[in-house]
Image (cartoon, rainbow, N blue to C red; front, side, top):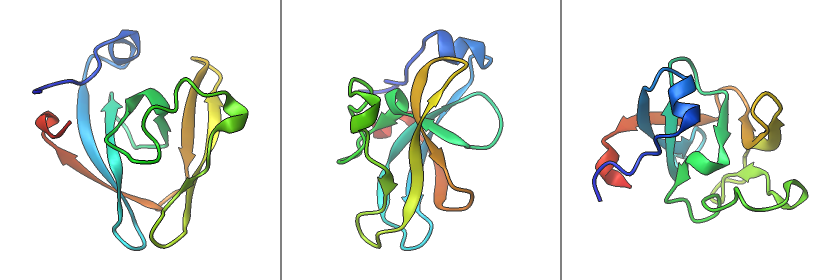
Length: 111
């Protein structure tokens, strides 16, 4: 299952560059899932269609916006982010609170 990262118009709009991040809670270190980060820059939001291997947050991109949960660490209960609609692209995402998640670049064969 090597290199299952998405290669679509969003990736192309951000320069065609992607990396896979392992996302964890900053407070307790609990694993939240993997995330495909497209393009350069800091991680401000996590698009729902880019979240992989997360028990609670994978496969949410088809849900109605009102039914989306908040991004909460199951272990320590910290609120890490809230659902949002990125208006420019009309995509659902979690807006992350600054400093609440830890990111680590991993190889794409983790998904």
